[in-house]
Image 1 (cartoon, rainbow, N blue to C red):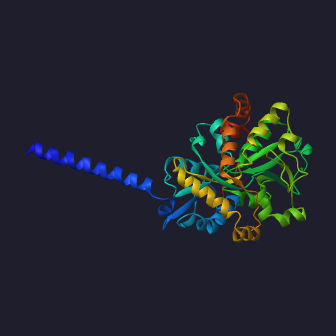
Image 2 (image 1 turned 135 degrees about the horizontal axis):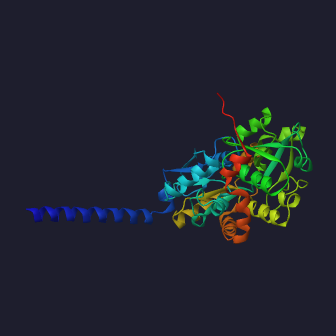
Image 3 (image 1 turned 135 degrees about the vertical axis):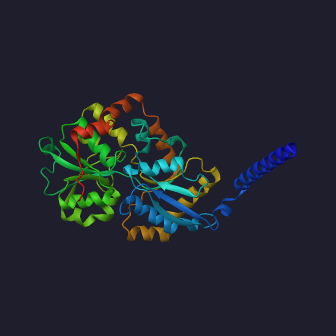
Length: 361
């Protein structure tokens, strides 16, 4: 009787394993259209509503689905925290890998992986990009009544700089400037996204913030035109066509080693606001989503909607973004070490040199 019971259990186990393998094979055999038909595609964000991440995600949510075989419903999911690191860890550790979740996350993720491995607990070499809506040149905007409005004057006068989490460019770039030049930045970190620290700028809590030019362009065009705020510096590998007279960090500040660091930490700008797939996504679904993105950005309805929202559009295909990503990951070790001295050890630096945002009672 014991033998028969054991045979039954063994047989049931084999049957369950067979059914499981069969289910996996069926999933793999599904066409892209069959997989997405009647389903939901989620766009994951690591920032709250209101900034450039949300701007492009909402555009994709409205227009991407009709270009994907099976026409899935597309929604946006926010998981803010740590300048995008919370959502990034979720994407790599817990997100579905079947193509039902994609993301728009910071262009600095490969940098964080190299510079701060304990915090950058991901492998960007496993990511496949789908397409970019626009480059992400961070633009440093300052209030007209700040203690100093010219870079030269900031070497003698303290400027309060608002920033979010450790992995975001809003903290990394000002910290590198602080540590590698004579510019006197006092970082005030902890704002949850571009909306809150833009409000802090308006209230005079901070004097300067570094924010994607696309957000300045879409949200604060009138304030820039009136002179309430002025863009004094930008990051990237090339000057934005909209800001031809505003210097890049590596053009305006630092010695030769500092300029190498600034070029390196700006090298994610061409990736910009880009859709990426979860690691392990089936190749045919990556291909389909890339094709859908390329069709979407040429769709007149999408272009008209983008214009109404004042969204900057300078699109790039996914394969081109993969090359930028790998170029960052292949940065020479000595350059990474130089940048690491300026940017990692953020906690120690900020405990000594940075202020914390005051919490409201």
